[in-house]
Image (cartoon, rainbow, N blue to C red; front, side, top):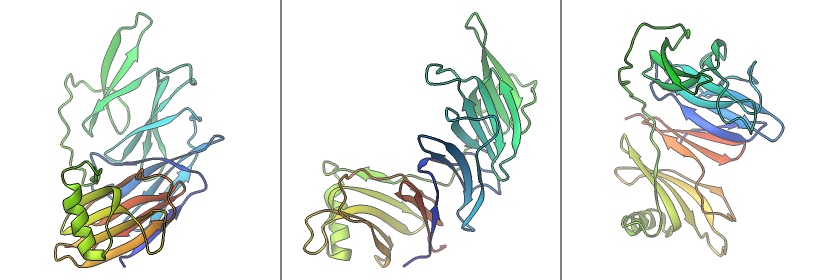
Length: 266
């Protein structure tokens, strides 16, 4: 079995976001939005060091605030007046590594960023959309008139889901059956990176009438590196959120538990 670490939260995990334009120190950081009917918090975890960098309710936010992106070590949030006010009322930037507020712009919303500059929009009373360019780290205005396309180099990937109707389903299913002696049922998720092949699948265990969800990690030599049952007697075959890079596999075990599996380095 590969080394694993479980992050347990007091609130359900609503959303997971990785840095899509990572800085050198943020490629192993994940932002977590935690939400229940009565409250909302945000956290940043370090999957390489199995640590929670910070977790808190952020000042100037409320239940309607939404985490909209993670870029070059900066978390961006939109605040809203409520469910009947769908347009953002402000834009906030938080330092992902520390949780400190970098800046706040009332009356502005996020348009795009390349990791250095930021496009924001302001809606005037005549409904004309005015685009401004700002520096991502401090929110100050920039003289730039064009936002160059970002050099995105995020290493995280999402597995591909293959339902029974997929032309690859039977091939992948036969591969799994030869390795573990059991045939996958319903849908399965598949990913491959850095010499590792990853599967999430549903199986019938011995004498069982209900499906179980499990994870399987093998290398290109078909050696089993990790095989674990995640959930038994499942009532739904919808896969929870998961993604991976060359060194980590991250998935939601349940609404309040996030698991990180460390993959062997090539």
